[in-house]
Image 1 (cartoon, rainbow, N blue to C red):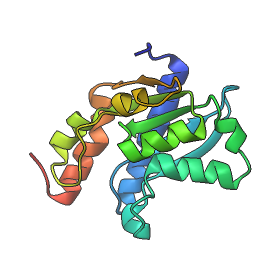
Image 2 (image 1 turned 90 degrees about the vertical axis):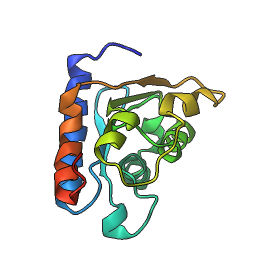
Image 3 (image 1 turned 120 degrees about the horizontal axis):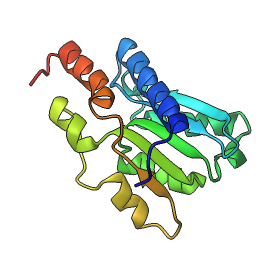
Length: 163
């Protein structure tokens, strides 16, 4: 796991902000920001599963889809995806397929899973899934401590899942 730079922290905080936007729209609190190697933002995404009814519209996949639709798929190669929460196996695999070079997340699945007890979970971590591929993708997280978990606490209150 790499150290978090100020640039990383800025993009990670934006992902958390996007997670709050997803929550305000009635969805689970996940957000993602895809950033090209040159530092430019390629795309952003928010979880839209509840609002679209499409179980594949996780924040990371939305960001990848937006980038691809905008003709920016090549910019994803070697990019960093910042996620408010540890990416699930589906999202981690999609990022590998897209050629993302680095995944940085705020809250670990085990941490936000303890706050939001309902919902499907996997024991396979993002790093474990990525490690099974034949390419090198750096996975870094969890980062930002309690700051990364605040949006999940807000969601627990909103959903009445408080623990």
